[in-house]
Amino acid sequence: LNLIDNGKVKKQDSLRVYIGVSMNPSMRAMMYSHMTDAIKTVEKYFEGTGYTGMMLEAMIPFLGIGRKDEMRKYLETIRQDSFSKGIDKGLELLEIYSGLVSSSQ
Image (tube, rainbow, N blue to C red):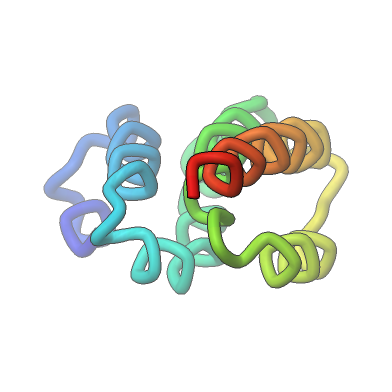
């Protein structure tokens, strides 16, 4: 994530990095703790687009596994109109992913 902050990753690739890190089980806790920074960065780079919502839709199902209630509470504190639909879609997918995890145990 420092590579994004230091400009070593192109702005257009920052979304892929955030999503990729979120999908990596060993990096999820770290990415969860940096979600606010990631959102601020993407909002700054892509203001007025739907990219922040798209990023959250992809990240939430992975970062929320095992912390579904905590994730919901956090997202309600940061919710904005510009990415609210992405949060809703991500939470919907989190329900599905959490159900899959529960049924496989």
